[in-house]
Amino acid sequence: MESLAASISDWSRVVVAFEALWASNTGVLATPAQVQEAMAMIREWLRQNVSNDVADSTRLIYAGSVSSGNCEELARLRDVDGFLVGSAALKPDIVDIINAGGSHVSRLISYFSDGGREVISV
Image 1 (cartoon, one colour):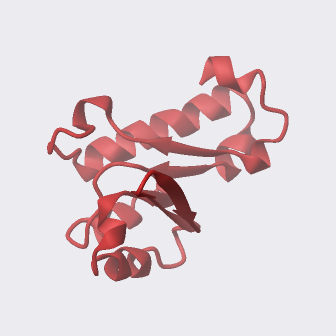
Image 2 (cartoon, rainbow, N blue to C red):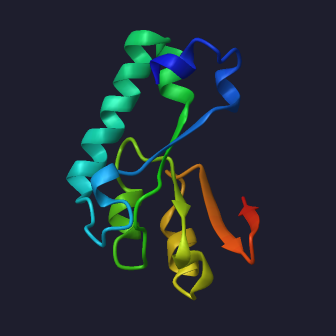
């Protein structure tokens, strides 16, 4: 974060996505408590190193495994502003994930690869 922060002039265009490295492509899921702890640490880093306004307004999205089974609980976390959804975006579960956001989640970004062509849906 520190190496990137120095080169960012417009924080309103920044979205920070987080997934625990130890959970990436392992099938091991981070608990909601672990997700909240990590997101709170990111928000606090922004507060201490950039500004209160940036910490309060930067969108933090969870990029770990999101499914119809955990989306509602994750969406209720104080420091999660949305999701970066992988393969679940290709399943009917995506409807549950979108609906889990309610007013708390500002954006749901769905990312998947289609025959080598990257597709981002906001």
